[in-house]
Amino acid sequence: MNYWTQSKDNIYVAAHRGWSTLYPENTLLAFKKAIEIGVDQIETDVRITRDGELVCIHDATVDRTTNGTGKVCDKTLAELKTLDAGSWKGAEFAGERIPTFIEFMELVKDHPTMTLDIELKEYPIGGNEAVAYEVCDRVLKIIDDYGFTDRVVINSWSPKLNEYIFKTHGKSGGAQCVAVGAAAADDIQQPLHLQH
Image: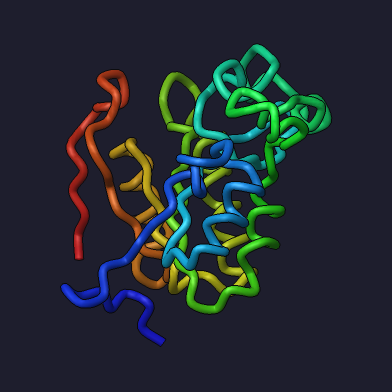
């Protein structure tokens, strides 16, 4: 099936961090509500915890979207699961939690036309290369295990990570890989040159 057939009569609607206008971003509630309104695609961000779990959260710290403080990578999954990821958006969302990437995939797996945009937030800079590549490889394996390989866009603001994805997984890897926007100044080490 070709999931990528948008046209002027069929414009895809993507839910950035779920339905984040009305619900707390990157929570299962925001993702569920996006599915309920019939979006074509859900975008989420993936980071890694201190104990190696993949979680859906945009920022490097939990400060903005939870009642906690500190870096995601310095906390265990158990510590993250104690944080309230909803109250910042409104009292009615108290008790929402930071989901794991597996919880996200479990939610979307039964929606056969849903496409995904997964933004990898771990960048291969400053000695973080091994972690960034491991997260990338694990995310792509999970996507494949769930049967989403042909309906996922993997994006990153890191030219180096995008090049790694292309060279390691390439077209045979199945997932679409795109570079978006501009990389952070300290991540621009060389231009991205993809060979076809």
